[in-house]
Length: 232
Image (cartoon, rainbow, N blue to C red; front, side, top):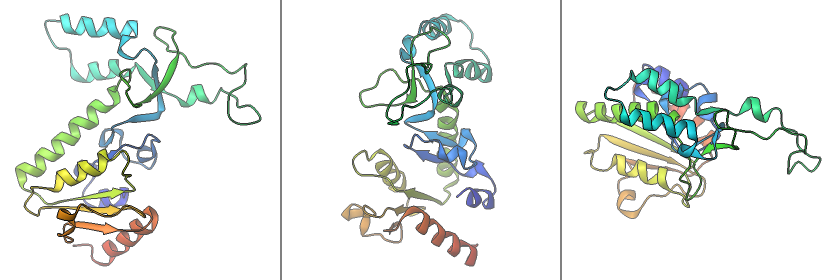
């Protein structure tokens, strides 16, 4: 999929919108500011206190009281310091022989700002403590891309891969995005067990395309078709 983006002129025409928390889009080579990880990522940690973390709370209060806005890039970089990579911390932790817990001498991840416990920067159910500074730039780019599509009345295609039906936020997001675009948009749904669409959408198979295959097999098949007919 990265190659498709590059073949179409670069990442500025593409966004990844995902509820996965494994960070694989970025690991595969997508720029971080082109990946909307709407539920966060296990590759980052944050304070368990969330925005109640004292240094962060003080910073936000200072921002609210400021008469002039600071430079956006500086603000984002400063704010991002309250979310940090988990790799260095987790690499120091040792698992027990049963591989289901850590050893007693393993260091417990802690917030570098207030020394309270750290947690994954992932949105849990009924979670009001997650902070999302990493989401600011991708969300802005995502909104800009949709605005460009609307302003230019451009055609677009959403490739949805493996979205479940229990937490169906991404499935619904794709369907809503394509509706009302006068046929300019299309949605390819790749899913072994749940590739179907609601009855009203299923009546338009040229727009709502169902592929009941695994992700790799389906993407390889699409890639082969693109190579055969690159202009389509």
